[in-house]
Every structure is written in C-alpha cells, then in structure tokens.
Length: 88
Image 1 (cartoon, rainbow, N blue to C red):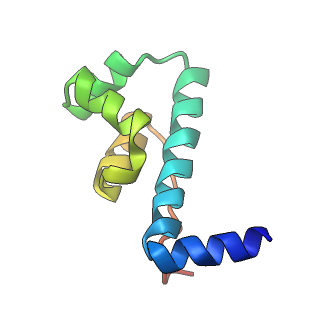
Image 2 (cartoon, rainbow, N blue to C red; image 1 turned 90 degrees about the horizontal axis):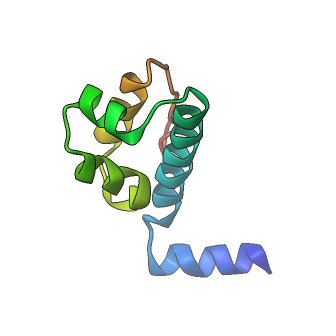
C-alpha cells in the first residue's frame, strides 16, 4: 500500500524523492545544530544570511538549493554526505 502511494506521488511529482532527501538532510542538520547548542542566529551569521532566510531553510527545505544545504553543513563544521539521484 505504501509503495503504491509513493509510486502515485512520484508520477504526479517526479521531484518528490529529491524533495524528501532535502528535507531529511535539513532535519538531520537541525538536530546536529541543536545538539551542538548553536542557535539559528549563530548559524545564519556563519552562513552570511539573515535569520529570516535561515529560518526558511529549516522550515521549507523543499524549496532551497543543495548549495544552501551544503553551506548549512559547512557552517556547522561538519562533512555531510548527500546522496543525490544518480550517484552511488
């Protein structure tokens, strides 16, 4: 049943799988940020973006670029590996 649902969603929106990967990546980075005791404001400053733009990253990851997610990872001082479609 779940597989059928996912297939229907992918047929309607072929980018759905990629959007889910972005969301998972941002959720993992947000958890890591919180465990490090860092605020959104601190990471926004390290990324060179406004707090508003940073909040957008954490609340709407589907509509941001992978470059922005990578910059978030860099600001945390971590090497975050992303598995993009077509990569091993």
